[in-house]
Length: 311
Ligand code: DGY
Image (tube, protein in one colour):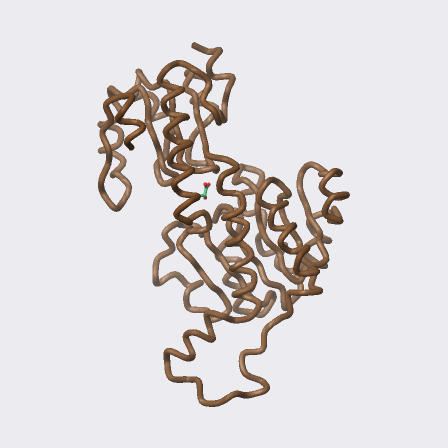
C-alpha cells in the first residue's frame, strides 16, 4: 500500500469480507485502476460501470475471476502475480498429499479427543509416499515444481496436459499419459491446471470410476475443476480413498456441506500460497502491475498485453 500511495490516491476496502457487489460497482465509477483479489468478480457489468478503468491488477496468479476478453476489448490491461508463489504452492500441495497419505489430521483429532489409548500395530495405517505413482494434471510452473519434490521422494511420475512438455519429460523423467490412463495408474493425483470452460468439472463421476479405490486426490488449483458432489459420492462409496482440497466449489465451503461429514477428506481454506514472504511478494508485484497500467505502460506481468494496442 505504501508503494501505491506514493504514486496515486487509493481507496482501500478494509472489510474482512469482500465488498458487496453493489458497493464495488458504485466504488469503481471513477477509478482508473483496480487492485482486485480472486474474490472480486471483474466482469463486463463492472467494466461498464468504470469508464475510466485502465488496469486491473489481480493479486493472484489465477485470473478466472476476471473476464479477460471483455477487458481486452475495452483496452483494459490485466496483471497477475506468477512465479513468486510457485514453490510455496508446490510445498503446500505436497503438504496435503503427505497429510492425507499418513492421516495426520485424523491422528491429531484422535489425540485431542482422548482417543490415544496405546501404540497399536493397526492404528491409523496410511499409504507410503516413496515408491508410489504420482499423476500430475497440468504440468505448468507449479505442476513441474511438485514433480521435482516428488522425485526426491522416489515417486514414479506421470502427467496429463493439453500440451506435451518434452523438455520436462527428459529433465524429470516424467511420463505423459492420456487423462484416463493417468487416473487408472496413479496412487496420488494432484491438480495444477487453470480453471477454464474446458477444465470445469474435469474430474467428475466418470473420472472417479477410473481411479484406484485407494487413490488420493489433491487440489490446490481451483475448486470447480472437481465436481464436488461426484467427489462426495466417490469418497462415501469407497471409489477413491481420500481427498485433500485447498480449493472448493463454492468458496468458502459451508460448514454444513456434505463433504465435511466425511472422515476421508481434508479441507483447508485456500491457503496454498499463504506464506509471509510469498504474500509480500505477490502484493509488491500487484502494486507494480497497477502502477505501470496507470502510467499507460506495459505491466511487468501482463495477462493481456494486446490490450495496450486497443487504446
Ligand atoms: C492464486 O494466486 O491464484 C492462488 O489461488 C492464491 O494465491
